[in-house]
Image 1: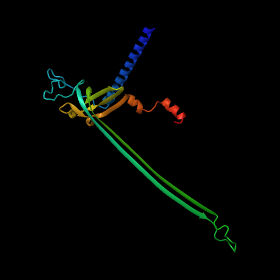
Image 2 (image 1 turned 30 degrees about the vertical axis):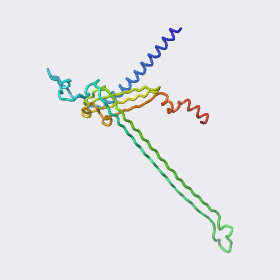
Image 3 (image 1 turned 180 degrees about the vertical axis):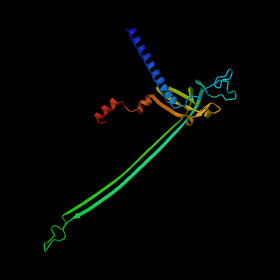
Image 4 (image 1 turned 60 degrees about the horizontal axis):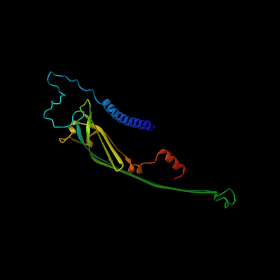
Length: 226
């Protein structure tokens, strides 16, 4: 019985790991497919008997920079977003109206009907709203070239996983880098990365404390009026 239980646990763990790998590979494949569609077709390449334009030794005077699939480069991530929005509205409306009869033919007295109807209405509205958002991310990531587009631009991917004190933080970055934007020290700034995708997610005691409760728990709390 114990042997069967161990086999089931091992099989379940293997399936979970395979599912995670499939999800990651699927995300990268979709990302590459979307970029490949938007790129122009590669120009025809004529192969000589000795010289090849795309050979690794074709540019002997070039710096040591990432240029082929599998090469590493450093991405300096400096992203700051600040948004402020404020609105104010104020309205005021007053209505006064009266209706009556001031005179009648002959000598009929109109004292009782001089004021038949009187209406008074007042309406006021005042409202204010303000919203402010600030996000700052500063870090350095070491990534790798996962594809070279037909235009010569590089598709890079960087991932960092930090597991400390029961808190796991994952940073994933993907984007398109122009070779000319890579500095002499093989670094590129994040604001020079096109189609940038930056994902920062956490899992653990800290993230669980700030993460909204699950849908079934929110439903129960709504019934309990909490």
